[in-house]
Length: 398
Image (cartoon, rainbow, N blue to C red; front, side, top):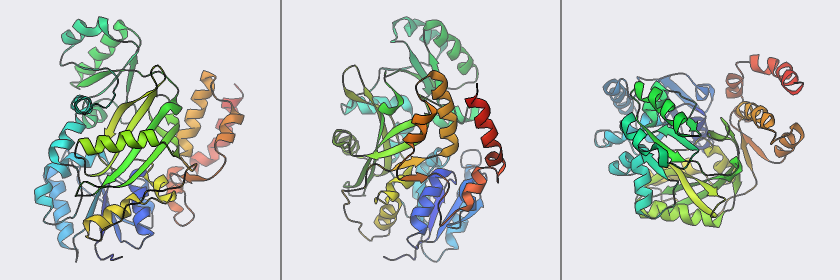
């Protein structure tokens, strides 16, 4: 394997840390940019630096990228791991292609995906099952349709970046159990000039959430396909996977791979589905056109997405890889502990069951023996670790 081209990972959160470790262990020199310090800044696999905000200071950000790239002896390979960077890179791909190598979905595909209602329409157009989904541009329009909705419904961002800036960086949306709750929530959100979609909530436990993760080369061939199940989410029911497990799910693989093929998808992406217990069908929740947070799980299972990406764009022709190990879990201990307390309060998870669920082979979001320092960042350099036993005692004694 030729390793002359450096890698540049955009986004130094856990997603970027996973990408950097997967490349760094293969001998690739990895650099990282982010507009704020995050966990991957403390990894010895990454030479990280701060950069201008890609949305708020786009021209300065692009200039920073190009100046840095010109200092490299070979074209860097670009890895997008955060929504904050996705549109800035995609919309300036022609300019950046002079200095970088990357494999991204087509511009119109990305534009359709980042608009969650257009994403819904795209999925419907290729006959992928979805929850019933509504989009409003005013409170008056919502009032007209609110009576006929299939409550409860979930209110979430039309555009993720606008939502994160004005509403929350951690809360994905809000549940409305009836017409009154829906209109009250929408009134507050519209007041902040944030566009939303309203989606039917698919019944079933959090363990009914699954992901198909794929890598498609520039010729349209699926080289890697990986499936996982969420065991716990944070925030519970409508969050990211705090614990996920690699699984073999042929039906999910078929639906996900056909979806990617039908929309002419390229590069890395992850499509989340929920199994609808009413009709037994997998319903698309969302497609993310970038690396997903638990990508290091696939690497631990023997399917290295970042490496395949690197080999593809540097002309080293990675081969189709159809197999990976199953039954391995990815765990964010801090998110999972918080989720456990909430599931326990709901009466669906005991301490004993939670502890047993973490048995077996685990991959941790922060700690690895060959790169331990990011874990100290994650625990606030020991403060959370010191407080955790007393916090646990207080919660469990209630």
